[in-house]
Structure formats: C-alpha cells, structure tokens
Amino acid sequence: MAEIYQSTYQNGAWSQPLPSASSAQWVIAFGSKDIMDDPGVRDQVRQAFPQAQITGCTTSGAIEGTKLYDSCICLTAATFASSRIETLSADFHDFGDSGALGAHLAEQLNTEGLVHIFVMSDGHVVNGSDLIRSVCKKLPDNIYMTGGLAGDGMDFKETKVWLNDQYQGGLVALICFYGPNLKVGKGNFGGWKPFGPNRKVTRSQKNVLYELDNKPALEIYKTYLGEYANELPASALRFPIGLKHPVATELVVRTILSINEEDQSMVFAGNVPEGASCQIMHANYENLISGAGYATEKAINDIKGAPSQLAILVSCVGRRMVLGVRTEEELEEVKEMISEGCHMAGFYSYGEISSVICSDGRCGLLNQTMTVTLFEEVG
Image (tube, rainbow, N blue to C red; front, side):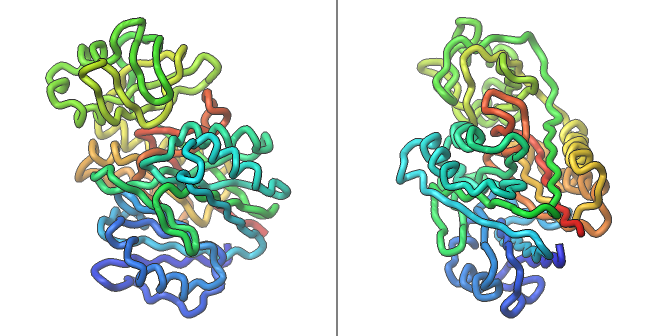
C-alpha cells in the first residue's frame, strides 16, 4: 500500500487532523455507537476522503495499535498503489432471512480478479452462520472471507454498519479486494481448553440448543459450572462450548447468549447443528493472550512470512469481558509478531468471521476468538 493514515476521534477532536480531499480508496471506521451516531462526525469523514469506500461499524471497543478505546472512533485510511476495492450491501429487513440476504449478495459478486472479502455485518438481527454459509457457496475455491459482526458495547440492544451514505441497523457490507499485487493472510485462534466428555447435539434449531445426548442441554451444562451456575447467563461467557460437526475438521467456539429455564434450552451466537459433538470449554488469561499470538502466527504463515502493512484484528466481546484490565495484552501479543511498521486496527465484536473448515464451508462464524487479517501490497 502506498500509504496508511490513522486517527482517533475522542472528546470532540481528532488525534491527527483529517486530510483535505485525500485520495485514499478505503476508509475503515470502528467506534462506539454514541459517537458513530453523530451525522456531523460522519460528514467530516466523507469530506476528508471523497474518493474512498467508507466502511465501518459500531463495536464493543475499538482498536488502534495496541490501545483499546471506548466512546470514540478509530479511523484507518488505506491508499493502494495498484489494487482496487468494490463494495456490496444489503439490509436484513428487506429479506427477513440471513441466508436469503447472503445469497442475494453472492449473486451480485464480481469474482473476476477477486482476492479477498472482508465482511462487516449487523450483530443484533443477522444470523452470521446463515449469512456466511450462503455467500461461501458462491465463492471460487481459493477465495476466503474474514470480518466480524458489529457490537454495541455491553448493551446488546442495537448494532449498526456504515457503508458510504448508509448507516443503519440490519446492514451487511462486503468489501471486495481485487488485484494480483495484493496479498492477504488470515488466522484465528481461541485459547479455550475443553473439559468434560464429548456430547452429541441431539435436538437443536439453528442457534437454539435443546438437547445433548437426548437430555436437556441446560441441565447438563449446569452440572459442569459448579458455583458459576448461579451466575448464568453472565457466567456463560467464561464457559463457551467447542463445537465440531461430523463433516468438519476444525473445532468452532460458540458463545451462549441466553438461557431458558422453562424448556432448558440455550441460545448461541451462531448455529449449533444436530449431529455435531461438543464440549464445554474454559480458559485462563495466559491461554487467551497466547491464543492471539497463535492467530497472528497462522496469518503470517498464510502469506509465507511476507511483511505486512495493515493488520485488522477482530476479537470477541466475551474475551474482553474475561480478560478485563488485561485485554490490551492480547493486542500487544499481536504487535510483537507482525512486521515492524505494520499498522493495527480492529474492534471487539459479537462474532468473528475467518477461514475455518466447518459445516458452513471453508469460512465460518466464530465466537470467543481472536482473528487477524494481514494486508500487503507488493510490487
């Protein structure tokens, strides 16, 4: 990339003055809903980057470098030397079904010269598993997606996606990259450790789990939590499940969003298909932080160790809640491994998207995971 610019908007001012009519082609803006909702701030960005595809979303914490920010916008602008980007979007409310929305977007894709797709999706009403599965069916075999679901701090009420003049809930945006000189590396890792026996999902409906081994799912789950069972559903962030479908080769982590004492079911941030096996998982601080390093290592290996210019991190709000004041340590872990001079941006999300061999195809929705996408423009 010819140039990377970064600035943070906080307390009514930008940390670096916005440029005048920049020629950057891509702007990424991650921030808190209270600041992103301000049309005046969004107008400032559009005026500063008139040639750019402006993309972004609300978050549960924005990342610039090794710093985590709340009540702000972290903005990154990229100027490419020879590569180009195209964007597509659709509104969930026009379809009412995430799979149908994904299929619609896939039909609009220009796959000639396509290198990579970065996804920004509403994180409140969109089923990320269905969305990714539908898009993935239409992709060439060598093309992957990364990205994440927008956040809303710790409120879990409403999320929004920003694409140029659109800024709204229910929106899904695909940022499509083209050009032979653009190299993209991708990696993900959780750091969670399974415990207890493997159990089979015997009754579920999309992201609602009813039975494990033909017994009430919540009843079984509680037996492993001990004193933490009294703190559900909040304590569930400390004990996600590891899910493996019979046709998959990799385990996917799923976060529990809510529980239903009446029918003993659990609602997850992603589909839990019948026939899959699962185990309860737990982690300590060190495992989660080192997991960020493993994710970075996988992304570096994916581009065969080539130096990178931009790293986009999407990590889970659940990891942030568990890590607490040590959250920035996982950002520092990434920084230590990437190329000197590589710029870091990203956000804490309600779901992460990366390459994973699972029931959704070769890309899938992840939870409680650090994902790293590296960009390098060569030549």
